[in-house]
Length: 221
Figure 1: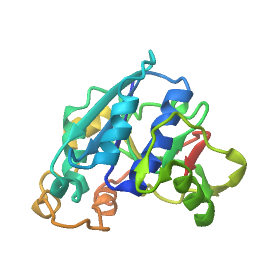
Figure 2: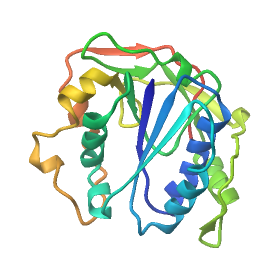
Figure 3: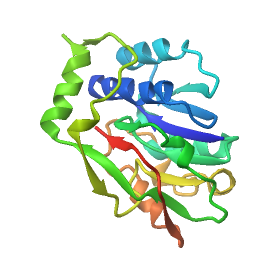
Figure 4: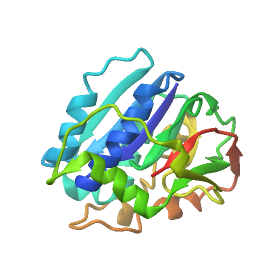
């Protein structure tokens, strides 16, 4: 079983989350727990989660965790919570702008060591087309959630050179053992505004073993 962990807040990310969750619904996979950290006062993200949370697919377990927005702004807080409580064999820390195409999640295997892994490649989209995709769902500051697929022809294959914040894969045993920066107070302190330095590079650099997985159809909007 795999667990996918992401954070979401704000209208743009809520729109991307709609594509993110749609891909899990549309593409049958190994059992997957879809964990999303969100703030209860974020109306658009809550609307998206309320829509998807009642969709029943035999391979999906929805796991939506609300927390204060100040904790969302410090991403290691939620990732540490997810890591230590996960019951999955493998955990993928990701972002709302990632979409998992056909065969993607089935290709993720369980690392047999304490290393951090990433997909070899991903498909990227031009910023202009990204904003078009956001605009297709976001109308006058509101979103009408729906299960919607992406147009794969708009994406270009690129290499992933390191395990950035959206493509960090470790075994469940490793996640439960080390958490996500639990011993670094500066990364576990809630913030009043979003910090673009989200701790993912700092956490990655604590590892001594790095590897890749041949995972198809990883898309980033």
